[in-house]
Image (cartoon, rainbow, N blue to C red; front, top):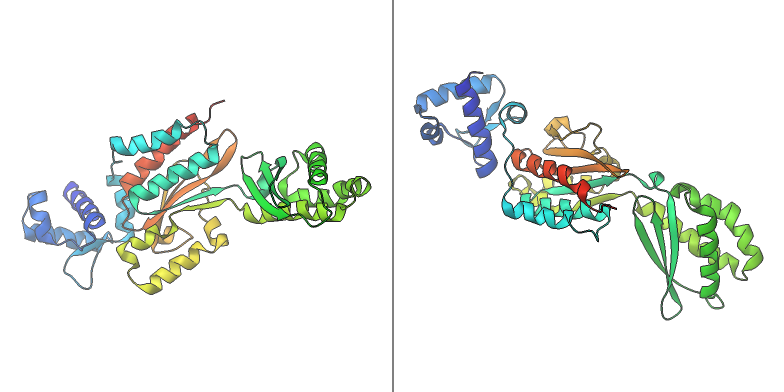
Length: 333
């Protein structure tokens, strides 16, 4: 492509991203300073190269997947963030009360609000977490809350109502034994060690040991089930995009968001910010996924933005880049 064709493609992509309308030759004449006939001729060239395609309900053109890809790789310039956008993110970066996982999810929540796309955070699964501490919080009416914490900063809790003749003191005593013997155990191995190592010990020291054992077994089992470590920020945001005015498309994308095996395919495998348009991603051929890996203080995962192929690429890349450059400053020890 020559420079004029590149400029034309850039205008078509950015106009379609902004207005969601096929771009006609007349609207481009003033911006490019050439005649409508010249624009039409250049559009024919771009169409023959596969970078734009004709919309069946209009004489205008829209970008193809190849056109978006060429734009991203050769024509796009990262957008500068506004002062307000930076301020919203800086508020999170400087909040030392937030653990890292919460800081990441709050950042992605803000990105969803700023872009109207869906944010996804993929942490490591429960098998990558080790037990850090178990705590018991007594409540009124013979109830307790069991808190399970991991070395990756994940905290899960479950409330139990104690059966008759079961005492909080016995639960606390068992908790102390678990903390003494099982700290550092991978979460997916805790239940087995609970069965073969902890249960024989409490059987000698606690009257209602079966009941107490079951409380902790249930707590750890639920933890393992719930710590797939997949977080969505405003999952329905993408449904506000014009591409999802058809109910069948809505059903398809919602079904995919509920499929964790499919969601796990979003996980980033390469360094840097990477863009996967349409057929390039394994999640859905009608979306774009922009994602990057994070590794901060030993905590690893993926942050990703899911939106239509008509995505504000320059803005999303700028936001993810800003988070990547600044998030590590949170929670300094």
